Length: 177
Image (tube, rainbow, N blue to C red; front, side):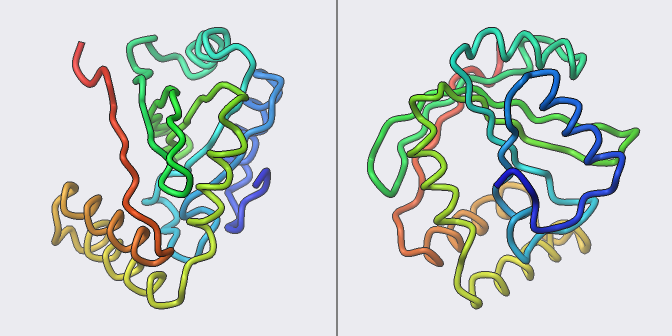
């Protein structure tokens, strides 16, 4: 998952390469960028970062992305495929100059195996789930017919049903400080 199924524009690819070098770690791509339901310019790019020092990695990302530390949200996630509790941090990053957005998830290396297994299960999905995701994304991104909450709910339902797993249990712990 170090490469993406969909080709990224050279300037965006360069951004991710520079970040990977700066952090001295691999960036692992998951989500729609690895499936057929990716909408270039609309879908965010999901990236996992695994590290032995989460605090240091967040500080370095804060510097590289030019964001406040409060932009990183603590999360708790119960993996649906094995019930493991995972603790980490997320940041939604928008780069208007390069015209992309990314959601970075930062985890301790001890969670790597479980998180990657969960993401891989959501990479190869049945054809009908891909079609449904494409329709929901078209309604949300291009036609602006459905609100964000409905989009997230439908996407989650399609993914969990499509792979035959229970829905993820996911909490963002510090939404508003």
